Image (cartoon, rainbow, N blue to C red; front, side, top):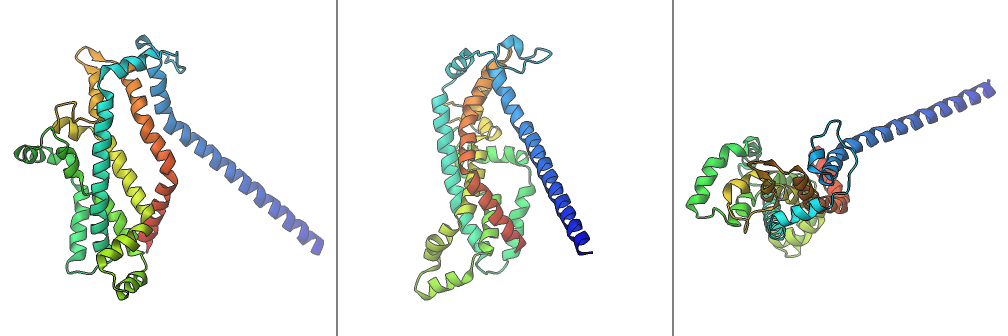
Length: 291
């Protein structure tokens, strides 16, 4: 009986091993399929940017590039891209910095401090996420016109200086912060402001990186707002510069695709470099929500 039980245990362990291996293979296959699905649109843009204009709408489609590198030279000379890059970096950088400051202050207040009406005020903030931004375009335009902010950097930075998502994410992170550290700092004579910036903020780095990446990428990809609120290339970002390839005689698909490639690569590299901290911040926020 003992030998039979040993053999059955071996067979069951071998069966479990095969099941685990099969699940891992299916997981790898699923990950490969998702990777191809996500990367194929960018690959198609690259192929279009390296083909001739007569091959863009060809059927059956051309899946391999033909080395038309002059499309990149033509696309680069089509618009003042250095100015667009400068404007985009300035707008995205200052917007991200402003959002981090406001998210830290509001998130700390909602997550750590106690005051009357905190829950109602926080729910009011969350309700703002359900309002479509396009509904507010006309009143926002009138406000910016009255402030004489149209066609300025201010119109693209200040209205986006606070983020409900950033406040929510940092609030969830601060709710899990050990209160004993703050109490110890207060007993040592530190003010609440000093404790926030010297103790809490350094420990919230993963969540801050997540908010910073989210806001920076959103500002980099912004099109509708700057397209409506600005009219001069001297203050317009990259996405508005893409409209250069949309003419009355049709769309220059090869030039537009080339521009998409050399304007998208910087943010792709940024995300690949910071993806570990981005995921760490997401996990920190999710643990805060469970708590």
